[in-house]
Image (cartoon, rainbow, N blue to C red; front, side, top):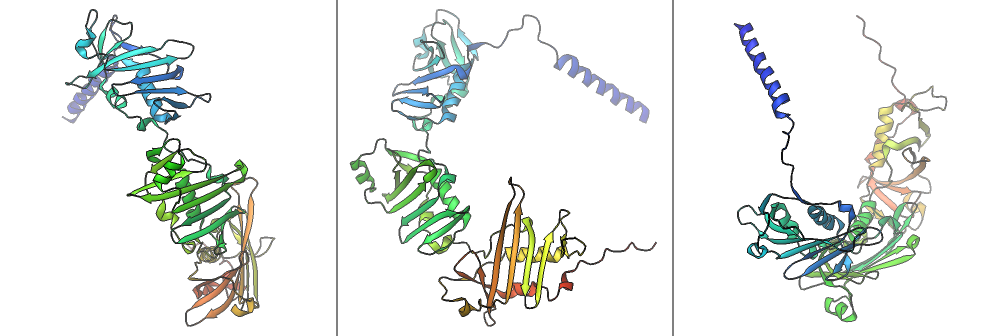
Length: 459
């Protein structure tokens, strides 16, 4: 019985396989009608395009770099993605159905209610597509190509690009700049003023406090400014009157960016009025109302921007650890096999789990308080540090590899608050941190010697 069922299933499978091979994949019959096209052009050959509608005409043209520009009804940079989408839609037009082959009256189908013209490379005269309204049944579009007697229906997918407004085709990130070129940054806003400079690939606050800035805060703000997108355009070619109307003659917020590599300085000014934020820059003729709200970031105080970590490094890049505490002095280096050793000959192995754990603890040290402008090292017990830690790192991803080190000195301990004063050799200010990390220091070298390899269990 089982054999019979198996044979039946096998025959069914073979039948399905034959169906797929010889019916589903059957080549088109001789004389089959190919897909009809009203237009079949290469999008790359289209150098200019216009969309004429009842209320307006939009005209786009490629510039010398091949980027799309709007030249009518105004001159402005275009959103290339949007214009390319429109060009692609009309360069290759599939006919859904031929309504009338010859002799049809275009007016009967409200043609031309709209008109699309395409100018091709090397040709003076455009190709014109005359369009009527969408078919009420399936949204297909009545159309006729100039010089072609046929009246046809084009795909309903054309309706969306045809109905887009001028604003949809405009480049909206009109204040874009290269954030990596910015080397100095100042903000004047409601209740706050601060300045920062980039030094050795790190952002430092220089006024009103001198401190390491949190990298993500500064770069995030720069990215927000560079990526500002217009929700609407308040002025195209700003004049003094436009600035006055937007309140930008006396702005509430001002941001200055210095880019010496590009030999320029850009000043952003913002003003909020009537539930709208207006913004312009010294490098732009436009005033826009931006999407989103960058003002809360501009209102941040310097204390919100400073880095809280005592040392900024990646523990997984650690290559050497130097420890000093009382009579203890250790230097531990990581070998190519990712093991830690006390000696250059790599004969005395350290306990990797303890070394890595300690380095991660140093990496994660966060300030509970800052001491800005300390009077003297002795005031905080730093003239004779309780302990000293140096973590050296090596970034092997870069070429050549980048080596850095962070050296920390541990000063006085406040037993009541359980806080330790720590100084990073890079900075003039001090950190107060949770003193618990001191418990992870080895008391003796033997505390960190690697355990002997486990012996195989006896059978």
